[in-house]
Image (cartoon, rainbow, N blue to C red; front, side, top):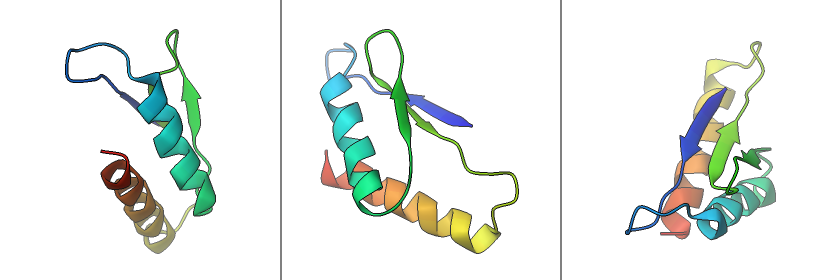
Length: 70
């Protein structure tokens, strides 16, 4: 599992961006989760059997989702 806590420019939990990033990933077929007390933790849980190529493709989708919601 990889988890990232998202904060806004003032250091406050950014649940809105977390939800937007997760939704953008889901639209492209990459399943992610959000969690945390303030809903600002983005989680990515690839299976242990994932191929290197598929993992790289999934991380490209995640990176594009972060860029699109900046």
